[in-house]
Length: 139
Image (cartoon, rainbow, N blue to C red; front, side, top):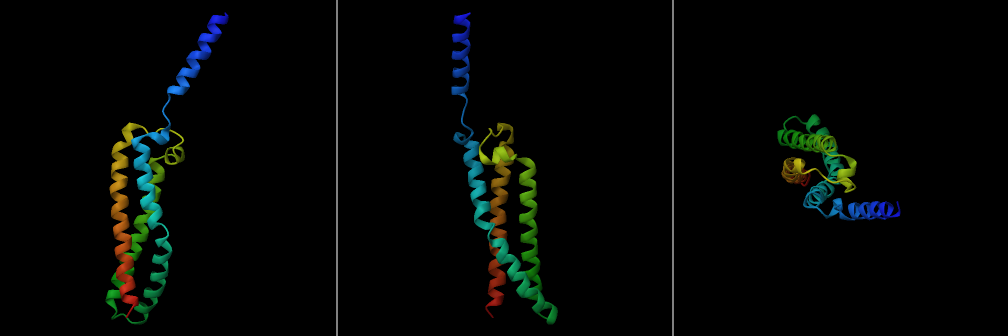
């Protein structure tokens, strides 16, 4: 009986010590890159709201300012894209996967690739819309 107990404890320790740390995987490294892109542009949501608040009333007051309307539309589209991206991301990945508490299934590699690409595209869309709008407010 004693040998069985020692053998069971040894097996259990070996099993748990061999399990991989989720944060030491290529999938989690990619998750961190995706989150870094998101975290870099997330504060720009406030900038987008402020620019919409600045440009929209000017266009309403003077409908000849069509470039203002286009800029507002681009800002709203960028804002909506970010909101949808966050919703989709949170539906595809659990909080534990995002935080590195559980392994990201290798079957989700295509999703990670797609989200990394879309996060980069979202960043360009948001920063481009902001730059366009800020150029108009300089006049």
